[in-house]
Length: 427
Image 1 (tube, rainbow, N blue to C red):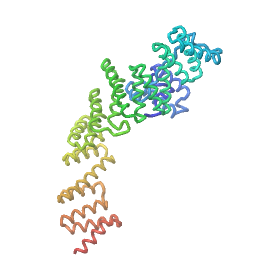
Image 2 (image 1 turned 180 degrees about the vertical axis):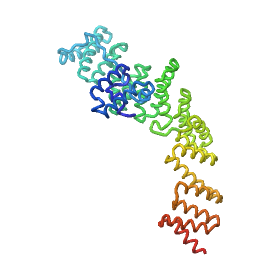
Image 3 (image 1 turned 30 degrees about the vertical axis):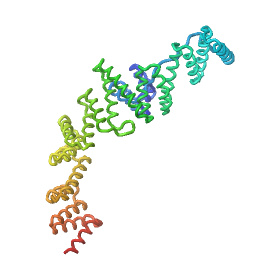
Image 4 (image 1 turned 135 degrees about the vertical axis):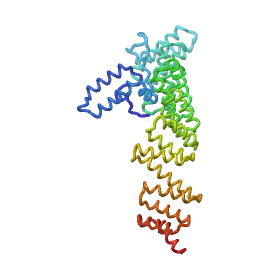
C-alpha cells in the first residue's frame, strides 16, 4: 500500500467530492505551474487524472484508508470554558459521591452526565482524547442511550484509529476501529479500514474476515447499480490482490483461481485475471489447462508477447514441442530482439537436447543443440554439448571436431579439454 498516493499529492483525504478534487488541482497548478515546476506539475496532473476517473480511483481507494467525516456534538450548556479548571472537577467529585449514595436519584444522575459532557468538551479543546473518551464512557455507563456521548465516543474511535493507521500503529488502530464497529456494525468504511489494517498487521484470519464482509457489501451495492464502474473496479482489485501474494503468504492454487474467477464474473474479458489463471495452472503443472487458457488469450490478443512466451512453455510441457517453437517464432516476428523470447527458445532447446540425449535419442538431441547455434554462434558450451552427443552416439570423429571447436572458442573450457584427453587415451 503506497504511502504517497494521489490524495496526498493533492493534499486531500479519501472521500472528497469531484468538485473538491478539481478545486485542489486548480490551486496547486497555480502554485506549481508546468513552466517552472515540471516534475511537481506532472505528479499533480497524474494524481488529478487518477481521481477523476472512477476505475482508476477505485484501484487506489481499494488500498487506501477511509477518512470518515464528522464532528463532535455538544449542547450550548455543555460548551462552557470558564473557571472549569478548579470548579468542575470538584463539582464532579461531589456529584459522584452523592450519586453513589443514592443511585436512584435521577436528578443527580442528569447533573453528573452534564458535568461529564462539559469536562469532555474541555478535553476535546485541549486534544486530551484519552480523558475525553473516559468521560463519554462514564456518561454511557449512566445512560447507555445518551446520543451525543455515543456519537462522540464513536467519532473519537474512528478518527484516532485513522491517525494511528497513518503512522503505522496498526494494532492501536484495529483496537479503536473494532470498538467503533461494535457501536455501529454497518459502517462499511470501518470494515474496509479493518481489513486493510489487519492485513498490514499480519492478522491474517481477521483480515480475511473483514475483507470478505467488505466485498459482500460492495457486491450487494453493485447488484443495485450493476453498471457502476467504480464498484466494479473496487471489487476486481481486491479479488486480484488476494489471488496473488496477499496477507504475506502465497495463496494455494485453488484459492487463487477462485479469486480470479470472481473477477471474471464481473468482467469476463479481464486480461489480467485470465492470464493469472493460466500462470496459476503453470505453477501447478497443469500444462494442458494452461495451454488452453493461453491459446484462448492468444486468439484475442495475437500480438501480446507475454502471452506468447508463457504459451510456448505450456505447449512444451504438454508435449506440443513443434507448436511451441512456432509460437516463439511468432513472438520473434513481433519483436526480434525480445530477450525473454530468445532466452525461452535457448532454454527449451538446451533442456530438450539433454533430455533426448539421456533417452538415447541422439539425432533429435543434435537437432536441438544445433538450433542453439543460431542464437549462440561459436558458443563453447553448446559446441561441447554437441561433441558429447556425438561421442555417445559413437561418432568419435565428429565429437573430437566439436570439442576442438569448443576449445577454439574458449581455451579455458575444461570440460572440452578433459573430454579430448580421455578420447586420446582410449585410442
